[in-house]
Image 1 (cartoon, rainbow, N blue to C red):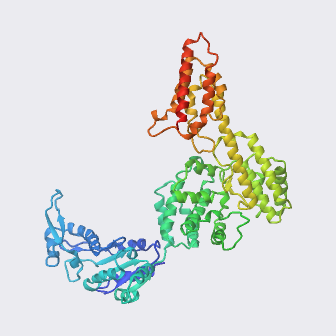
Image 2: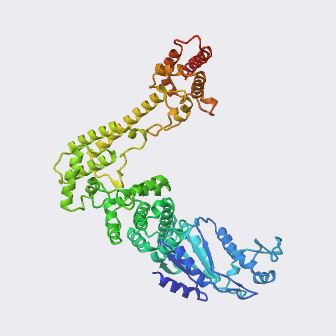
Image 3: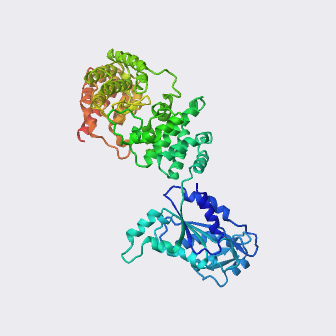
Length: 636
């Protein structure tokens, strides 16, 4: 692709004294640096002379440099090893009469950590590059990269570089994004300054645009990324990566390199139970395809890429990001026989991984387990109907009848599958393919949701928002932006919160109203558990707010003395947190515990048995403790 540039540069560096520089331009990330570094080695000459120095091509990045003296220092850092490779006598002969004493190089010939001498010089004199110096061999090639990111004024840096070209006969190659340096100069120049093209012509004799060498880059990047996961070989998918990247129109090879590195890092989290399966390679091909698509789109500002391939009735505009993405990539996915993304991995989770740089191993493998490549159970009828856009009429009619009957009878027991069914029916009604009322779909769905939460209490014991995301089962909810579907999600959210709140109440009442001697010491760990909505631990809530103090008191009075003492220690620990933690005090929520604590104290004082003197003594201590605690809480 860039062979003509290589041919010209080979010609240029062999010129005796060209008196002009060559400019290589291209957008950031197109591969200019990679390109030039790959051909530099071809210009190196063997250092065969014992009394002369053969200079190798010198590469310097100007990124962030604000003074020419810094450039001098970077050049000197490259030149210094050449001097170390020669003896003192040779070095003195080479620099004699050419350089001023401003920089110092210590020479050590016998590796005894002591300087055997030093050479001091001022590299601003350009003596080392002077073509008249016959003791210095080599083609005197200087390469300056990242011109656009140099903080020195554009005309000033060009003037600095021109000294090497005009006065030293050097072959100078510049690498830059020309549009950026031109814009920087034009925005800062005064009315009396010359135009960019005028001072450019004084230095630059030939300009070439470096094109992204996709073939070479992809092969190299895949080899590099394998260092992260050496068990993963993506070389079989090079053509897939190339075509997707070209279609993305990104032209930034650095982004592609980062995408492949991040992809390989992601695959290190996949469990062995999947990597050893026959379908694993096919899964990797599909996952890689969507990873490259999402990465390229997201990095170019398409924050709607997670909606790509989504079945959203309200997204029909041809210029919408998801529709544009479909035109870019769908034909390539078909060519390489890739599945629809819903069969592979949720795009929104790829976006999340790119944004955060992280996905938990459990979350990743949970999604993989339920996809089309590794799922062990057969697809349900509603899942088949989810594909109504592409199935045949006979299958569509049969599935619609079956799923509608299941829905009408309230046979769905999972909130997520019910939401899918509701979304499908809303889409079909909107498309005129189902002669039903959306109001019935909504009302029936609410009825089924109530039944699900009534019959399945485990839903309330976790803080997962069942179905409150935009998809599940590896599939996006259809019509999720429709008013009807939004109404269902609001209803579901309320059901979830109500059920979780009730679960918290039930948990506390069971824990304290059914307390036993054996469970007293378990109170600490039980209250360390997370409340159902996941917002906090039980111990950081009003644990006694819904507990019947009288019932609790009767249970405690039935304990033996040792268990009562343990319960008293628990109570003290809860209301004196400052004794255990620094900067922790009672909070306002502790006030909600007071009614239960008062009733508990009252119950403990009733009907003490005169013969249980030791036990009564412990009960009185507990009563006194409760009185002090209630008074302490009231002072918050």
